[in-house]
Length: 318
Image 1 (cartoon, one colour):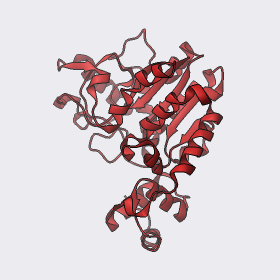
Image 2 (cartoon, rainbow, N blue to C red; image 1 turned 45 degrees about the horizontal axis):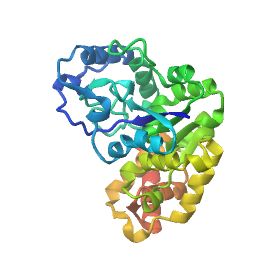
Image 3 (tube, rainbow, N blue to C red; image 1 turned 120 degrees about the horizontal axis):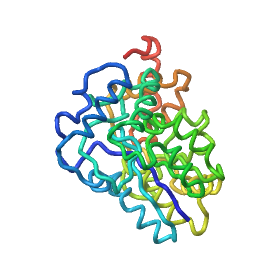
Image 4 (cartoon, helix red, strand yellow; image 1 turned 90 degrees about the vertical axis):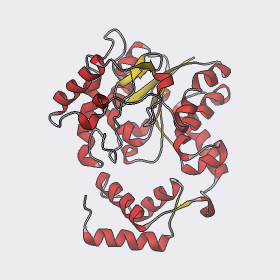
């Protein structure tokens, strides 16, 4: 069985990023024009390149790069792709420059501001990267195109919600190309996106799974993907079976022990609440506290409630 794994990129690059490939140095403007300038810079740069597999660093990528071998051990043929805010959909065997661009809104090289207001911009940017002149025109330029050319393969997305959000329209189209909609998996954490069309494919990964799978929260999605590949001989890789498997693993892991969570300042709690409410204003206080704790951070309920109330009374700003 073939599995196309599309994993999010990482901020850490193992080559120096040239100034012209820092997104903050591309003049602001219309998304299509700005993306065209960016893609021209990628195509014209004379900086050193590496295969995408060898370009990225960090916890997440160290696990991602092992997934093809994990798949082979389970009798699978795993093809690895990266979901890149710089390149778009990119095969990990293709050469790439080091660059600084991200869909996470808190970076100076972010594609768009954090929150719901940047959603359309992130999605337009992802679409524009698929048409850029840096691309090999004979190869898949979007997840939907990849799926259309390989309809029998399992498609596994391994990414945080910000990256899934950028790809959302592309992934919805990909789901329409599947011979079996049970063979599209979105391995991520809790997100309002689950209430939309991608909810049918969502595999939610609570933070406490790190106590069963090892590593830290930064590599959790990739470790869940590895677990699913290694266990596929027993359970297969269809959505419902995988959900049941992750739910059983979550019950075994239990809740995140309070004494292992990281302490945080009031400012960090307020920043988290503000960001979440900008994305989806209707989220309840209890659901936000659960999401905060699932990320491995510590905050007593009374303190969280007080800060939540303070923010709501003053309005959700910036």
